[in-house]
Length: 360
Image (cartoon, rainbow, N blue to C red; front, side):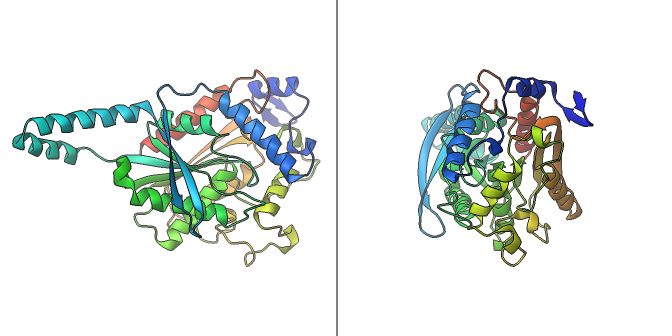
């Protein structure tokens, strides 16, 4: 680790910075569509930088959101789960072939098998960008590393669809998956919500909604990768960490403003901004599912993530928190820098998440 003015910078990230001419969101136009194009390009480049898991199977499914809008969901089925399904099918076929006694044995074996867990993955993109396709590599990696099937909704984003469209879409996905659990050999009690960046903020909002609506069965857990949780986050340009942020204060405020329907900062308060939109504004975090949060120490969201984790602990929610020293926002890929591979701590973060998911 290297330290400049008391700031710890990971050596691999320092090398990336030395080769770059600046990649912050402040370096592009304030036009939302331009930021969307810029962000999607970075997400897709980072996502594609990782080898796609061998044998991963994808399929597309549909349901309706809470307002009746058609919602498309992509299922990522890793080879490890496919093998388990094949073994189960072979057992069933052998039981049927054996006749009546074999059928009874088949039932006994099926009863001993535990239905599988599933992850509902919410892609990132600053509330104003991102797609399942752009994040395809990230999502497949989650499925592969955790040996878990993942369901990723193409939820609606701002500014065309401000809050509460995206939260409704993801909540509807969870309801659909629990209703359809038997079709996918999923245990409805073992559904985990996971979100990346802005998707982490949406996921946290959905977890609050699930608690308050009495989702039955409740979520098994929420895994939040450097989540975007608080619209009030702000730092002056003089902050020495500013040069290390890959998602800037200005871009962040733009994302929140569009997501909140154009509501300006001075007009935001506990009455005008629901906690399902901005989870950090929730007054009570009791009753939320077990939570895993990971964030880099040079991430714009570090302080808000630390605060949310501490509040969860005070609310008696089981929390596993990881701070990755000297790492910026979005360190799971090359940040659009050509030829730069994922960093060492990228793998550590993925291993931490997979291990946590596999416990549920």
